[in-house]
Amino acid sequence: MACKRQQLRGMYMFKNLFEYGDRDRHVETYTLATITFLLGLVFIRYTDIMNIPQTVEQVTSSRLLSDQMLALFRTGCALLSLVTLIWVAYDPKGSPDFPLYFNERKNRLRHSSGLTRLAAYTMWHFALFGLSFTISAICSWIHISGGEVPNWMLIVSPILFSTSYTCSILVTCVVTFHIIGTEINRGNNIDHLFYWYEIVMHNLNVILLGIAIIVNNYYIDWKYLVFPIIFSLIYIFWARLYVNIAGVYIYNFIDPRLNGAPIIHFILLLIIILLFAVVLILNWLVSWNLLLGVLVISVLTNYIIKFKKPDIVIVR
Image (cartoon, rainbow, N blue to C red; front, side, top):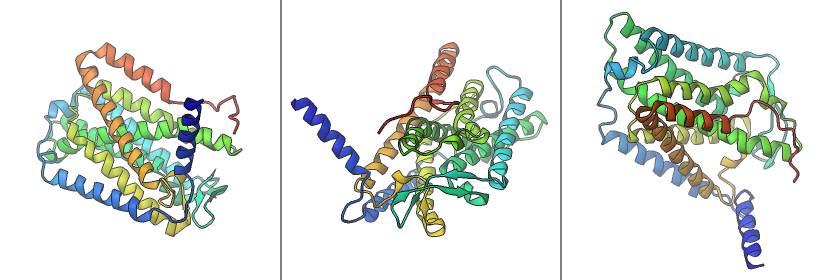
């Protein structure tokens, strides 16, 4: 009985984090976010993270592919990002979503179309995905053509890759393990989460990045951790600005007015750190034992992706 009471108390406390109290938590939440952001900038400023380039071989060669095949793979991924985001922005049909309306403090149906669809973290991370592959593809083609790859590209290419992979795993996990189930529980239609471009951004993203970490020769420094944190914090600040533009939070769990907003944001920070550690370990594992690395990446990727709508309806 005591154990059950503790479980019920824990469930109540967890649920209370996502409810509204007598006052919002703007000050605490954005103080935490701002301090973390500034510490990240200081870390970048006072370390050698932006000064030491990786070698041309590390950035432009592959343990499995020829230089030309690696360049084509990177170019294809960059074009996929570009085509997908253009489609999302200019598809006249648009797509439904269920954002949190700021004044009402309720999620309800909205039809989203045009450039406003690019406001979501999903689109931001996929733009980062495209930028990462674009820079690495340019490095590859410059090297193949006999040119000299600029130092700044040798520096930012592995940074962009590790940041993109970390954020992609985050997006895929949030959609698979949170958003799909939450929307079903609310009785909302989730067909839009399985449109072709959503599948590309929520599933194919981690598949292609998983392939990339296998074929790349990047060295991923633990100091790169600061970049997915800063990228995500910039989105947090943008989300508050977007409320002034559109009147909604696309993701209700980042509303700073929630009782547990500072705790929720701190947990998200810890999740990003954990996911970067996963990327770091995967990169080391592939370098240490290729077959084992491929196996682990395949199992992990298969576990977090979801191509089909669930058959079982989740009951409240």
